[in-house]
Length: 395
Image (cartoon, rainbow, N blue to C red; front, top):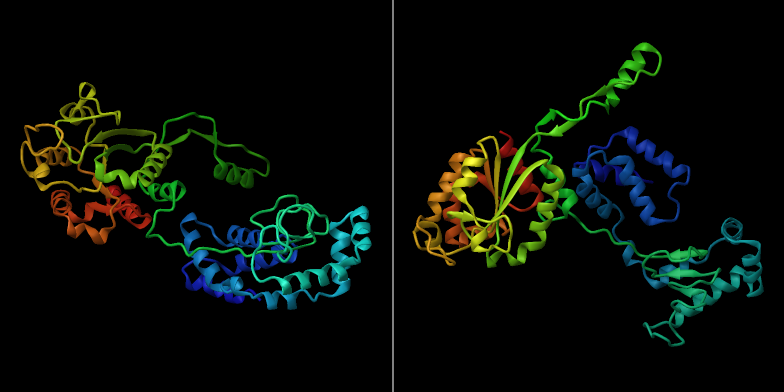
């Protein structure tokens, strides 16, 4: 019954094998995910997705296969309620204590419970909080959401509360996800992982799992192997634009910064306003008496650093092309001069632009920065863009 799901995964580009599909069927057969949609989703994802970068593709295939569940009408729900009595009795034996079963029998048993629910749903025309027609919420009502009644039938509940229900109807929606939008720190980390150069310069007692398995297989006994700790040896310089036009992009820039902090051991960051000039800041308060001279940064960090500018490149063209064009101070040299010095000092450089790529051509300053840095070295702040940029820096 899950063959269409398997086919959609293959068509969607998820590299799922027949062995993994059979493992998924085996897991379903053992009852790991029976009547819980969320558990079913995570079970399928855990078995058939081997790489985090394929999670978005999996979500799209999942949504395509199981779309339409949210369109089930109340009449169809009523029809589904007509369940065999022996199945309901088995469910009671599994989930209810003797005391709870006695309470249900006192109220008329499952038949009475289901018949009452059918009547409530048939009477309902809309939600009336506190009214007599709505399937009740909270309290001791057997129906509705968030209640504690041991014979409860939960409908429309956001999440589990008391784990006390004999039947649950819920609608779970799975969004279509793709790599053209920002999806948070976790996915940014996945994209940043392309910019790695491993060096074994840490502790000497890290477990070498592959070596241990290989040595144990060869010798016939447990032979624990260790190795020096492996660290990401890539050195990164981050320059953040904190001009006013960047205000709408603060959240996603913070996600990028957080991911970079977690991913790179050798990371330095500075702030600049609109364009690079003779002074930059380590603190975004940007006090003029706490500036770091740009010449000092150029001399301190060698050409082995990867240089990444993060900004929308949106400003007056004069700020780039002319001395005195800066809007906060009188700059003795044009921003273009300082940008060229930075690009010359750090040949592996990149500009990440949070503005949608389709909008770049409408801003003169953005086109000027692109001409300075090279069209292929300005990328959008999307998963695809960051991934493309990391490939460029790794060359």
